[in-house]
Image (cartoon, rainbow, N blue to C red):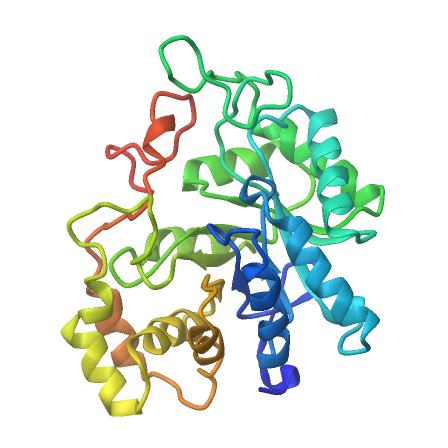
Length: 323
């Protein structure tokens, strides 16, 4: 697909972001991700969603830099996203994390940097998963506001073009808006028909914050997902009926569902066929009735509860909270 045929979303700061990107969570840096990123570039992707904790940014960076050297793309045509990890939540450490990410990517700036979660971990040397004698993650007791202010500093320093958040509830979004000066361009959250996020979407959009959907296929292959409904979304009768109607596969219907709602979407894959098919979704459009029907499948099914951090302050997935 010609990258120019991929629609963009205009963020609240006037920047355009490709509406679909390649997610890189759980993509091992063993050479496979390098090939996947190169293939994605050939398929028309220009948006790549990464994070420090994925520990594979060197490989993504090597692939995009090789493509730049080969004349396939220019840096300004790419949209590179990463996320500050929970051990880097002081204002100064957030900037340090961004600089570390830039070094891994071998790029002078990020297009978008996110505060990865609203919780924080204690800084213990360089470990990313600090645990106590009881095996539990150690609380950092650092306000996510501090991490976000560190990203605001990165914008002023020219290290980052746009900033945002991930996995934030409505209350957490509002608290951040009240305490900071730059409105986040996006809140990246799990979203699919079984977790439609309609209330959060409306709340964020009213405040100029676009939602980005991760795990848009319901996270069927993740080792983090051992829920009874694992993989069922791709077999849902409504999804399959629409796939047959439009001559598409189930995954393409689920991705088009999000883009038709105005969400940015970042499906992850290292499978060559899926990488190609995931971006082939712009030659059809769901009707409003079909979008509502898919939204009606919502069962508050969250594939990744990040359960090892549920004891931490600001963990967003409290069942008592209407996310």
